[in-house]
Image (tube, rainbow, N blue to C red; front, side, top):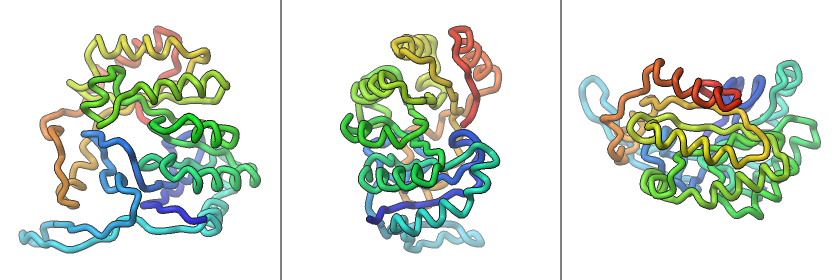
Length: 265
């Protein structure tokens, strides 16, 4: 079987425990306004126009985004860093995009990793059929589970989909006692007011197991990609990155409810 990826990051330190190899699969059902990998949205390998400024002159060209890779070749890449996983308690993280969009290929890779006793992690929006998550769950040691916004209507506005399916799948994974780290993108004016934060706490209180929380501060590091790939950047240009003081306050809010909280991956 073959999959379509757009990157492989070796020696990753923020996509789960230990030293990891992160595999970025193409395709995502969400269109988050703040997405820092907009080139990942299409599941297909695409050739697109790009633009950049060279010596003060705007130059247009074409660029291929994504490549096909076989399960055998990807496993060869993963095994290359096996000693680092063993020494650091690391492993492999499948990210995206949304890796569940290539669930057949993902399942095969997770099964292969388990045969080699390599720790597996899936970084997901949770926006998929439960049957898909149910199939991969036995071979997934850790879920990095994104909760973009606690309000359904705002989630729909900012990502293109509602959060009902995402929350349902989260509660089902929790009911079978899967290890879950919740990742919350912390974005000023979008999901940082008191009402939103309290709503997050209300949603998390329904879980039987207390997950680790990762607050992911909004940043503009991916904004150049929108100009590069000639894509619209919605209304994010005027959004400022959060200050340390506000992050510390939110971290304390979750910690007061008994959660282990980190800032960043």
